Length: 100
Image (cartoon, rainbow, N blue to C red; front, side, top):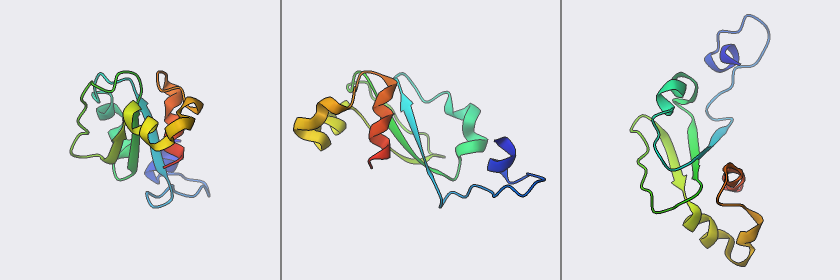
């Protein structure tokens, strides 16, 4: 996977380009500290963060990340009476990221 993402593959595997995919990440609302470990893989891609659990916890996306953050309130507002289809209290809330 690392070779495909960084374009250093020696085979005929295509390089994954930032205009081909967006990345969806579920976050528990504590921090984005883990992103630094993934920086080489996700920098340059558009990242959709889905904050599950308590929406009152405020998160700030690091400056080097091009992305957007949705929380439980956003999901419930978008889905309205069908909000029950997504469990906003677990990492499965990331499925909302595939809708946007």
